[in-house]
Length: 295
Ligand SMILES: [Zn+2]
Image (cartoon, rainbow, N blue to C red; front, side):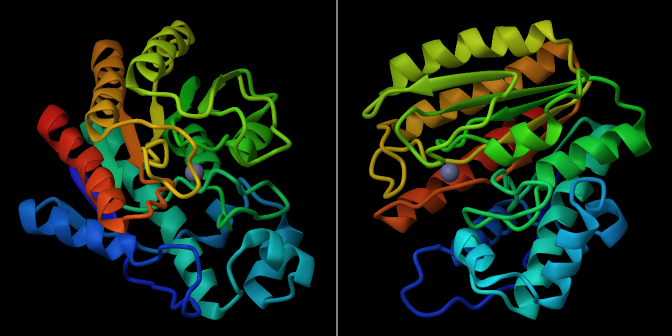
């Protein structure tokens, strides 16, 4: 088991910016304190690996800082050299976790899960789509023919769905809030829409049914987007899961990969709690659960 961090590149956002950038270092610090030998620093993804998931023109515009103002607005993060470096490293962390998981069974990335990035554009705080890049690297470098993306962030994995659609070997599951961003949804292999205020029992019932469909696809690898923004009290969430509900959710995914005997890569995803401490605790708990179950 290894946990990869992307904190080798960080971004300073303007004061009052609504994206909680500080959470990544806090989650890394917690896990490193508890499991110092497990946490490793990832390197930046190469432009070549990124080009598996993204158009050359988009990559050049990100690299050179020539995105149009409207594109930067849609992204929700101001462009900077640091953002480019961080975004490359954030995909690199998921690719490092993939490499480790393919050899040893499971790994986590303490960032990533940037599922709103499309082939030719970023949006919703996501510059590059690490999940799509990992799926395509798994195919190119590891001979993986069939894989599943299990996206349990409260927002639909629209970029991942669009990027990987049409690839019959890839199953994309997105369990998300029906009334939440993105308001124009893409089509995943399976989309499960949940009502505002959805609580643990209803959520876990829907998840159990969805994971059986994932199992029927017979994936050889699972990429898990473990966003915690379905938690009650999330500013951008609208659902009402408890911390215990989230842990039971994660356990379902861990059990699935154990049952199928396939590698698992865990990425961090969204979390925007009114109380950021609650969000950080929830993110850390995902990886604690992974370490406990699959060490
Ligand atoms: Zn989200």
